[in-house]
Image (cartoon, rainbow, N blue to C red):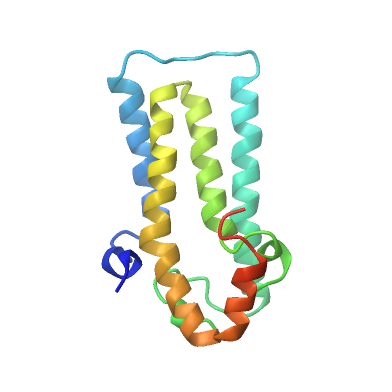
Length: 156
């Protein structure tokens, strides 16, 4: 069993997002240096958060359109391999959307040290959720999933 199996599903992805956002805020409050400001920072963070949320919603919409589960706890209940819409560009657009939302939050906070949570979130969700899902989907969909993995990148 790889790292994906060992760490899988300790904390569901939406909770991982909120924990990371709170951790970014705590870091911003505890580390009194590395602040930045520029003219359109808040506007840029708003545009980026909207983009991230659009990715999350587009990923969910594709699952609903295909009439399959969007539940990250039970990917084995997937009835179809979704490879259309936003899934043509990323195998994990919802998680990519979460990462983009965290990027926007870091810009909003204006704190360079808080950005340390982005690679931590990326690593943790890859090891605990994505690897877990990939194992199950490969077992369930076999060659179709392997072909999809060879054509579409995990994140972007």
